[in-house]
Amino acid sequence: MKLSISSQEDRQIVTIEEARLDAAIATAFKDRMREILPKRVQGSFSTCRK
Image 1 (cartoon, rainbow, N blue to C red):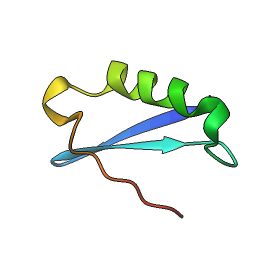
Image 2: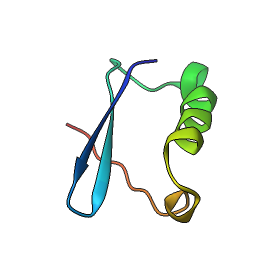
Image 3: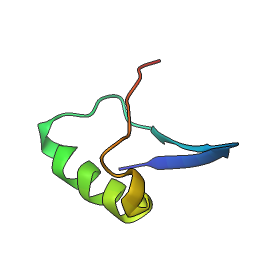
């Protein structure tokens, strides 16, 4: 799974560089996000689509 991370003033933006996020990689995605994000924000991230 390809992820890119960019930082802005008060946030980090994680972009999934895959055609889709399906059940086959959803668990791996959640585990990777737990590794990347600090514990204080793990329950407060949002999603958006391009």
